[in-house]
Image 1: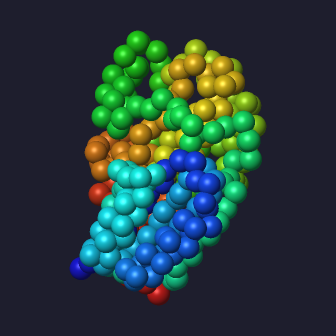
Image 2 (image 1 turned 90 degrees about the vertical axis):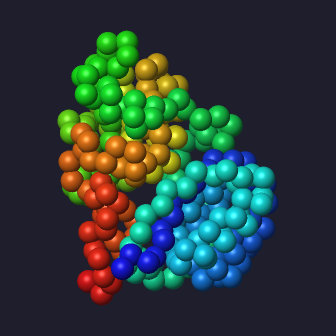
Image 3 (image 1 turned 45 degrees about the horizontal axis):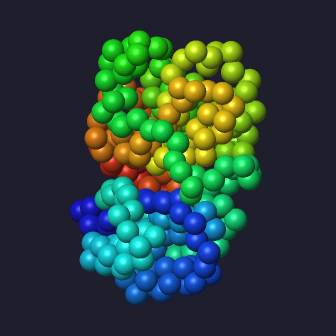
Length: 249
């Protein structure tokens, strides 16, 4: 039985009291017997947690009592076991490391396209203006091996900080096209698309909710394989079913 509820969530929002937020979040996780990883930084919060349904929903209710996290978008999936060995709540400089101090997604998001819109563009072979659409995978090479969108532009990078140089190497191939950047849950594209737009890619968008959000709305349409996730489930298929069904592998 898939009786464990998993959540993935993030929000870019200015947090002045990082230590206090981290302490409160850890207390909530312990109170509700949750395991996973939560990153808190001056730019926001990034959450990966798992536990029983009442615990997850109780945590979310109490987290959202803080106006900064009210209405935070959450992606849900199920598994037959808790895919984390322990709880870690950490203070970080960034909730997703990119090392570009010019970017402040907490002050405003880059434009996005919904899974439904992307699927329509891919069905048609172009966007609403008739421009060619290029799907740009911002994940590292190991993640891409598990699956990606059909025909997506991928890079042999080991970490997210290598992406700008990789994109620059394909600048001519991207010129004049509509670029849709995607990643696991959307967080990396919050920064990568802001940077690309600052560098002149006027028709560059992020896929709302990332691959996992796309799976929720569109299943595996135009996607090949699974989506790597950062826990002991290893990867999820388009039905959000895990590659690993039981622990101890």
